[in-house]
Structures are given as C-alpha cells and as structure tokens.
Length: 140
Image (cartoon, rainbow, N blue to C red; front, top):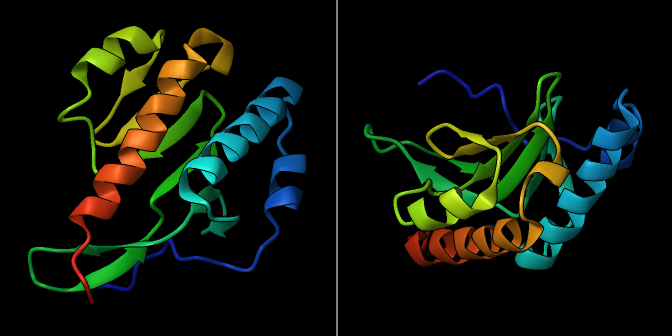
C-alpha cells in the first residue's frame, strides 16, 4: 500500500484557521473546534495541510494494513466546510433530515455556513460519531 498523504503534523491549527480568508468561515471553524474538542476530549491537530482532526482511531483496510485517522475532523474548503464524521451515516438518516441545508458524502457533511444547520443536531451527530467510532475500535 502506498504511504498515505494525510498524516498528523505539528503544524499550528491556530495559524491555519487564522489564514482562512473568509471571516465567517473562520468563525465557523472555531465553533467546530469547540464542538469537536468537547466531544472527543482531544486537542485539535493538523492532518496534512488542510484537515483539522481530533483524536485518532485505527482504520483497517481490506488487505489488513492499518493507519491512524482522526476520530472527527473538518476542513474549510473554498465552496464549503467539509465535516468528517466517522464511521459514516448508516444510522443517521433522521438526524441528516433535521440537520438543515447540507450535502453528504460517504462520511462527510458539506456545509456552506453553520448558520444553515441546526447546531444542536450537528452537536448530537458529532457526539454520536465519537461514540460509534470508539465502540467499533479493535484493541491494537
């Protein structure tokens, strides 16, 4: 397996957030940091050049190889905030309907602005994601 490009780094999360061009998106990033830090009890860390992640959880691939990945994370992209919730949305259909104006990927919620979503629902989804991820972790 090729080496993953997205690894935990020592880069400054504060510097990364401060460099986000859009003031509203910077403020949204700070809200996400508070929600995710509260849920994981982990400090934010940079994963690669553009993902803010919290905690670590092993991801095991079909070939048996494994690597660490953040339990939760987000990235302020030009078009939207990408919010990474593991291990996906299989049990979250009802919450997604209540969340608000979002698009989704396999385990990612794309939000233009946090004002477009119900923060209480997002917070509950974040907490649930942490619980499900930790429950599914296998001891190393």
